Length: 134
Figure 1 (tube, rainbow, N blue to C red):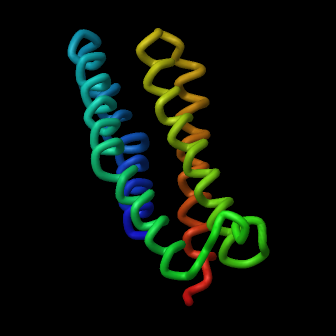
Figure 2: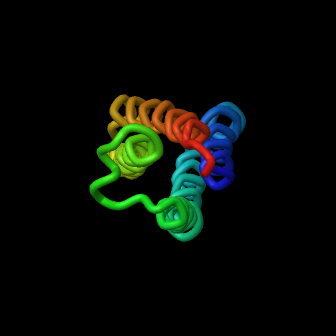
């Protein structure tokens, strides 16, 4: 859960603080490079640190509690974990799509994917808190 909270916090900081400040304070020629670089670095950090951390801890928690593929459909821990993991995959695709849309000059689509990714990230954190402790 800590990894999800840190990742969502990073997303919030980047989306709500860093990028709006960059858009206001930097000239157009510097701003585009800065925004692209910040997104690229966050993407690398996500792929190298947060994604393996989330997948590793999710697998370890499932193994520790005896979750099997069949139990992912059962009420309680299995179904909540399955929902969390499914939402996490959608969030990762939305975050990746945001970068692609921004790089292709489609700011409206990029903004929609960023908002969807952020909302989904908050859902991942809420689902993580709903997992029963065993």
